[in-house]
Picture 1 (tube, rainbow, N blue to C red):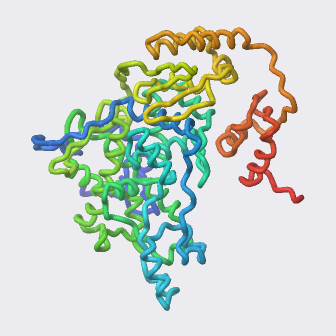
Picture 2: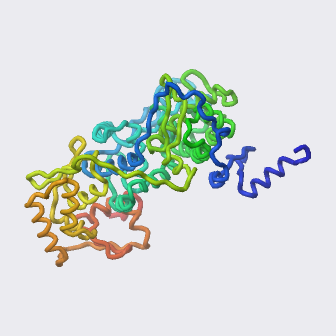
Picture 3: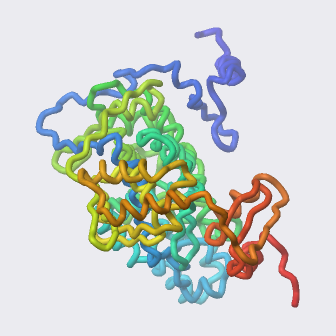
Length: 521
């Protein structure tokens, strides 16, 4: 290598697409994810744990669990109209007077100190301000209700809800009830159970309104970001959070090289991430605009111990997310994370392999029971999401009770199931199979009578028509407005029929959200 010009070699590698420059043109080179298949699992790259005795194993969920949990969350939200998004956070008096402070979640302690400083303007430019984690999407009451119903913790619930919102299945407006968007749910539910993991996994990779810092904070990490006062004017915390998430793809690239079927030493992962500048997006923002701190001092990332104090909790949080997906199992010794191991599903999700054969989903006991009032009770722990989809078609009357959903079957709703390709015999067979018993006679006769009458002419008075300008506007309006609540029929992607009573509500919604101009009266 004595006579080789290293700069020329690096430039050749860049032109070949094997490496790329780091953020801001810095002299940092990384392997792009697209090329990682050339780099197989390697026990020298990520070192196996030498001592595997006396480990406490935190096993991953089953390959089905995360997709099941996301599906159940959708149906519980649909069943409970009282679930609400969190309202806008109450502003500190100083933030209420200064709009630039409203774009940041700064600790009230720091704002109190600034407000009481007689030389406030100079102090603003001279100090760094502690940034708080992202607030959960749900208000406190709804968060508790859903966590209890689904038997999950707050962090995992909020994370799953963010993925569903990003995929266009749940509409979330501050201080408003949550809305399930049937269009996105139908596409999601049409996939096999394990296949539903792919869009959820991809949504995590591109999720910009939440970072692993938020999870690390919930897990007890004291590491945090502090923003310089001078930079509060030209950036927002949302933009900063999006910047931090750029580390995910590179982390997945490194995990792709983890040796299969072996416990990987967590400290080996920490060291490798530091050596390869995996978290360059975070490293690059430190300095005059952003500082990395713990509860007692500012961190210098050139120092190995400081680097570890900040980034080890972040990597633990990322591995916790992998465990949620069923992609990794974690090993502890004396409550300290010491190792991780990719599962077969994990190897597939990080593209270590392109083949994965999912196990068969086994269930025990009856998924549904029938009551004398013509109602159907479904157990969330046993009900196949495809069964929940059928029940969702059969009713608009759903409410949750503990770990069950209670459905009231109605003729108007049964029509939706028939339009979706079901007939009375198929519906009855599916319900009886799930219940492991015969359908009550009254419900069976009702379904057959509704099917016999299906297809006859339906007359609607005073139907409102809405014509759209292009083929793509309809899905956007369904995701971003109240249109789904008033939609009666689609003639084409550009022409739809609306319930007349919803026209004024929809018009106001379109104006408020900027889809149509406001017309002065």
